[in-house]
Amino acid sequence: MSNDHPIGIDFGGTGIKAAVVDLSAGDLASNREKIQTPQPATPDAVAEVFVELVGRFPASSSRIGVTVPGVVRHGVVHSAANIDPAWIHTDADAVFTAALGREVHVVNDADAAGLAEVEYGAAKGQRGLVIVTTLGTGIGSALIHNGVLVPNSELGHLEIEGYNAESRAANSAREKEELSWEEWAERLTTYYRAVERLFSPELFVVGGGVSKSSEAFLPLLDIETPIVAAQLRNAAGIIGAALVSSQAHS
Image 1 (cartoon, helix red, strand yellow):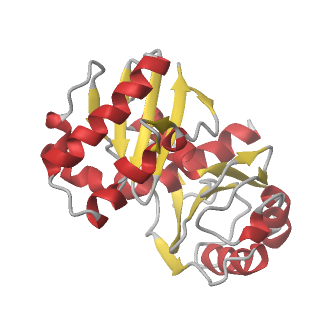
Image 2 (image 1 turned 60 degrees about the vertical axis):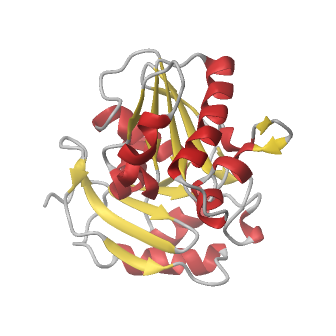
């Protein structure tokens, strides 16, 4: 394992995962380490967890990239759906850089997963507009055109038929309402058709934990755009975060 490899940290509402990433291979170069997200998940508490996680890897001065489940602009967090409200207007780049004593760059979690899928996964080599969606508690989204990210798209919050889209079409809605795959696919069809009309993408990529069951619902969707399951699964956020740290540094 090279000491030059960056570290990716995936900061989620329930768990914080980290690993050393080999960007030439698009894969993890170490075991994945995980610690439960502290409650409350304040900036200082999360920074302490980051210090512990990074301490589990060989000493280095490598770059670090971090995903945050919120809107991120110029390193500053502007929303906090599943983390402590203290994050709003916090300069996360500065907080983590100070805590870890090296350069840290922060990116929205869905954007990180999207970048990883375009660089190494299901959308590798795809030109034009790719929209990566993560179906989980909500619906995360990443818009990437010819490899360039348009950040913080938040397409899960589109209003469709009078509803916030993710309240009807996220995987959490399927579980809560005990929808069959067919019933859920009808809602997903409505959602993806609306996104199609607005953006005319070349490809949809579907991530999130439920993507491992993609064969149960993706073939049921009635849309024009090709739609495929994400390939990197739970490693996408870590790999994408490391990729962002490298791009910011170059």
